[in-house]
Length: 131
Image (tube, rainbow, N blue to C red; front, side, top):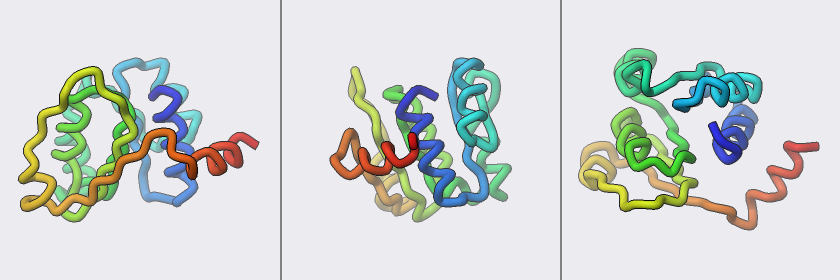
């Protein structure tokens, strides 16, 4: 998890979720994510993330997915692992277009899609977390 992802982990923990899972290809970043409060740290190159989340949730899927990597495959992965009526939060800036099946968002799962990137309301919370 990079700086934005680590911030998302810390902020998510403030909401007392049952489980926060950090995903990254870099094992060192996963160690930092664990220290920042992630309950689970998983490397997508070493396991089937979607399958693992589905098994962990009795095949309902995740309630929330926060995407902060800028990797198109992370968007597709997140949409796959979300439960019906789940929330997908996008914080990334992408170098290339992301291709997704919009039917999965609207008709199939009725996903709540939110976006944010350096919005004015994120700074006060981030500053409070650093104190």
